[in-house]
Every structure is written in C-alpha cells, then in structure tokens.
Image 1 (cartoon, rainbow, N blue to C red):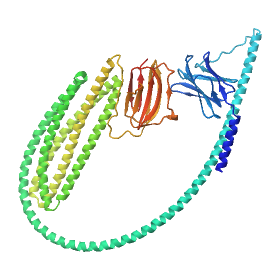
Image 2 (spheres, rainbow, N blue to C red; image 1 turned 90 degrees about the vertical axis):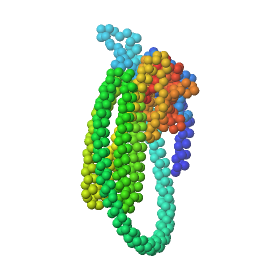
Image 3 (cartoon, helix red, strand yellow; image 1 turned 45 degrees about the vertical axis):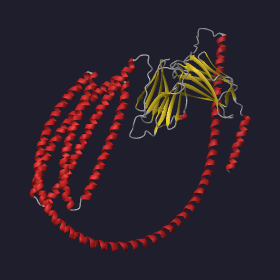
Image 4 (cartoon, rainbow, N blue to C red; image 1 turned 180 degrees about the vertical axis):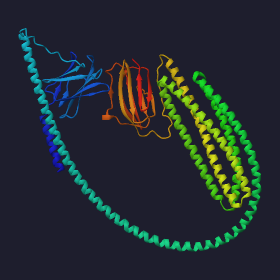
Length: 631
C-alpha cells in the first residue's frame, strides 16, 4: 500500500511538471509612487507585512524572476527600496517581491491583466470621484472615459472571481494531500502496533526467566540467613557474658565517679566566682557597645553629609567600614572570651559524660555542629556573591538613567539609615539578653552546688544547650556585619560606576563602547533563549533590540572585519519562524545587516556596518539595546 501511494504521488508530480508553465516576472519598477510588477501570465499571489523593519511582501505562485535586479534602492514616495528573489522547486516556484517602507502604512494591490500594481495609501485619503453637472452636456471624451472605467471595474470583478476559483482549487489540492498523508499515517500506525506486540511477547518471556532466577536466588538467600542466624545466637551468648563482666567494672567506675563529682562541686563554686567576674566584664562590654552606638549615630550624620556632597561619599563610606571592622573585631574578642568560658564548661561536661561513656557522642555532635557552621558559611558566601552580582547589574542599569539612579541612591541611603537604627536596637536588646543570661547561669550554678548529682547533670546539659544557642546568635551577628560590609562595598561600586559614566559622557568625540564580561554566578545561566532580534530607526540613529527569556550574561566586541559582535553566554537561538537575517541597508543608518547565529554553547548577534561609528550597549532586564550613532 505504501509503495502504491508513493507511485501515485510520483505520477501526479510528473504530470504536474508537464502541464505547469511558470509565470516569468520580467519587470519590477517604481512609477508615479506605485510599484508595477509585470509577468508573462495572469498572477496568482498573496501579500503580508513584516513590522521590524516595516516592509510589504508579495509572493507570486508558480512564478520565477527573470532579468530583474535583486535590489533596487528607491528613497521616495515612502518606499525605501525593492528586492526580488525566487525560491521553491521547479514546479512550485515562488517569486517574492519585498518592498521596504519608511513606516507602516496601508496599501492597495490591483491586478491588471499580467500586471500587479501596488499603491501605498495615506491614512484618510480616498481616490477622487468625478461629479456630474446636470446643467452641462457630457463631452464625448468623458463618456469614453466612463466606458473605460466601467470596463476596468468589470475586468477587476472577473479577476477577483478567478482568484477565488484559484483559491478553491488550491484548497482542494491541499485536502487531497492531507487525505493521502492520513492514509500513510494509518499504515505506519499499524506497523508500529505489530512491532509493539512482538516486543511485548519478548518482554514477557524475559520477565518469566527473571522470575525463575529470582526464586532460585531467594532460596539460596534463605539458607544463608539461617546459617547467619545460628552464628548470631552464639555471638550474642558470648556478648552477654562479656556484658556482665563489663557491668561489674562499671559499678566500680561509678564509685570512683562519685568521688570525682564531689571534687567537681568544689570546682563549680570556683566557677561561680569566675562567672561573677565575667558579668562585670560584660557590663564593661555594654558600656563599650553604647559608646559604639554613639559612634554609629555620628556615622549616620556622615552619611547625610555624603548625600549633600557626593565627592566625599567614598571617604565617609570607608570610615564607616573601618568603624564596623573595629566593632567586628570587638565582637570577635568577646566571642573568644566567651569561647574560653564555654571551653571550661564543656570540659566539666565532658568530665561528667566520660564517667558514663558519652565521649564518642559529644565528638560526633561537635563534628556535626562544625559541618553545619561550614555549610552556613558557604551559603552566606554564595548569597553575598549573588547580591554583589545583582548590585553590579543594577549599577549598569542606573548608568543609563542618571536621574533615576540618584533617586534610588537616596532611597538606598534612607534604607541604610533605617537598617542602622534597627541594628543598634537589636544590639542593645542582645546585650541585655546576654546580661540576663549571665545572671541566670550564675543562679543555675548556685542551685547546682546544692542539688544532687542528677540535677547537676541536667542543669549542665541545659547550660550547654544555652551556650550553643548563644553561639548561633553570635554567628548570625557576625554574618549580619559581613552583609552590611558587602552593602557598603556595593554602594562604593555604584558611586564608582556613576563617576566613570559621567567621565565617559564628558569625553566628546571618543568612541563609546560598553564592554561586559559574563559575571560570576552561583549557577550557570544555561537555559537562556534568544527569542527576538529587531531594528529601529530614529533620525539616523540605528538601534538593534535583542530580547532573551531571562537576564543573560553578555560580552560586546568586534571581529576581524570590524563587525560588532554581541555574545550571549550559554544561550540558544529560539527566533520565531527560524529568521536568521535582517537586511537594514535601505535605512539611512550605519547598520547594514543583522545576522543572529551561534558559536559553541553561546548565541551571537553580528551587526555589519556600512562605516565605523560610535556605539554603546544597555541592558534592562531581559532586553539588550545596541545603539549606533548617525553616520
């Protein structure tokens, strides 16, 4: 059946080749503001428009272009130029006429015999209509003109009907082709069903063989399990005997541990005195923190002065960074002092836990805590890198809109002031919490000296948990200080970027080229798609617009032919209709052609210029704009 269908299709194709006579397009010219297309027979055609850049496309079916220039610049009557081309096979050849327009306007296509006349229409304009004067006799010339117009209207209506008949014939041909395709699809489905049935039979046989193999393996596994069970019973009997001996040894060890606990009670009394000394040290630390709060209020005043004088911004931000570094150093010194206290408490806890065989579990807990701290530090570093990358992207966007950048800068400054106030309030609350915690620990130590052995152990474990929570809060405080430092670095980078943008704008006559390197990211930018490439003209300035499915890292440079190359890192082409080339040579700009493509794992947009001109690039979210100066 399949071979019969192929034979029928080939026979139909051969007969079609014998009877099709192509329409030879021999002349395409612009005359009196209209485009005339001359062929050797009555044309069968279709039209459509393309918006960017605006152009009208006329496809003439079963036709070929002969002796007509491929490109004809025009530059008048709203028409930029005319291009012609032929594509398709010998029997389904299509002649294409592309009319470049200065802007999107309405048009009228009128067939006249073997010609097509394309007239652009101005919005609101209507063709003039002659009005009859009842007081005058119509001259013979006007009567003849009226007859010619009537004949022309009749001919147009006849051609319209012929066009509708041709459209019906094409739809019938398409329906026949779809029926043949459905028949072939049914045959292929039947063959696939037979192949699937055969594959299912083979799969069932393979499954039966595997089931028998598994049953045999299970029998062997049960035999091994019975042998292992007997061996385990013998080992358990031996272990029970060893456990009894171990219990006797532990009873002796507990007697020795009791004596040690009495000695530890005396040591805890000494620890109480040390805690009182630490409370006094923390009071001094509170005074230092209040002094730091006053220093930070002064830093706030400096930040307000920075808003009034941008030239002093960098120095004041560096002073604030140094003040925060000193605060961080003081906090680290406090953390070291508290770590020493924690080490002493942990030494006491280990002494009690060693009496009961818990040294191994403490080591595992410490290892897990260290792993969590390292994971949190790594996550914090990645978050800072991401925030720094986002800040750099934002800085580039702000350089394109200076007024918008200044407003954002003032808003960011107000946010920093608010965050600073919240941080000071949080530090004050944290200091009060630390003093209360120290007081509670001193009271707990006093109660522990009067309580029994079990109560002392439970309170020691509670203090250990409180100490771990306190360490977690201190770690969070250090991370917050590091984040504030990163924000200061971002603010410095923004000020530097703005200064560089102002210097670049002031250097007249120099070529503006914005170079961008792919930025460091926490994850590759795989999955980004190049979805749109377009062109705009504004008084001789050419703009190439590129859109992606997500913000993409990019680089801008030139190749050996002095073409401008925009590279999108790890992106793929996803242009609608598979469009690969934009010809902009008809426009009065420096841009001649725009060629999207790929190079390795990257997507590229190559801009060919008529002559070298200054250019620059800007990125706003998922849209990149390349702007080329007037030639």
